[in-house]
Length: 130
Image: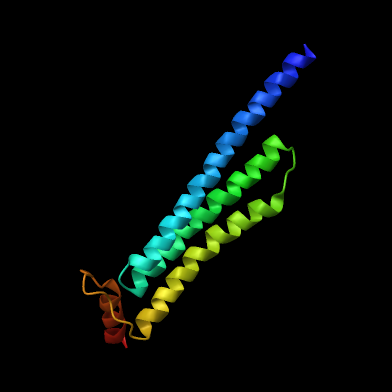
């Protein structure tokens, strides 16, 4: 009976390992997509969007896959990985937004393909109030 349990446990650990490797690979693919977006997109605003959103997901997938692997397969719970996921998930999009806003306020031009400028309307409305 014990040998059957050990065999079943080792098979489950192997299945879990492949599942968590898949999560980490998804995160790695998202990181590559983020890098391609940074290289290929036309202006600072779309590049900032690619850098902040997809890289946040990429890092989150890699860290969550790592956390689950060590917790379920190895039996080691590491709360610092969870804190890193939460920290990155909260700060990276905000930083990307602030970088884009600073670029707009310093006069960086939008791409010629841009069809709508909501900040221009908001800026004009705030200037009319003053």
